[in-house]
Length: 272
Image (cartoon, rainbow, N blue to C red; front, side, top):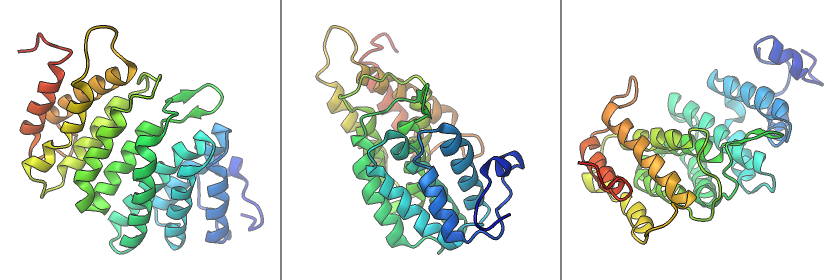
């Protein structure tokens, strides 16, 4: 592999072998630029696919913190595709850090969390797919990052549950979940609830955010945000009852599911 240029088409065609001879800092910088591209082939098929694999395999350990800092910085990027893919890189970095304790400094994870928690409920372009830009999926990608933060910063779990609640109840949206965003949020919430140590109150109190958002509802058409919220709650109830493969159900699944069912009786008044 020529150290002066990465032939991304060849790398992708060959199954993403690591480009030996390319200095890790230069590769990280190139990936960070490509991850902002409006071209889904460049951003998703090449940059994200390669970065995720090489991070997982430990090939980018030397620049892991740089990749995380760059991704967190893109959460305020003016273009949606750059913002929407940033949580995926943060998720990959945090997951690698979980596999190798000490690899990701706590201070770095806290820096990224501060930026993430400001961005996630505030993101207004929540489309899952765009015909020109390809996958955007800010809600789903953010959910994946939230679950990763719960492992890296376990004391933030209650805050992360509330953050997901605020995301699902944002009223300023005209995008109705169409690309399984509800399921990705439900999976993340289930994984955040999985970690031991949460009290029953901590496992359920975040649903107060949802209750307050819904309590003013009345007759008439269901707003898009309320539909999204009900869809997420329904998906979460299923996850709490069935669990996640190879992970089981959270410690307080019964109590959380009961609170979720109470909220679902608002639109589904016929439930027993």
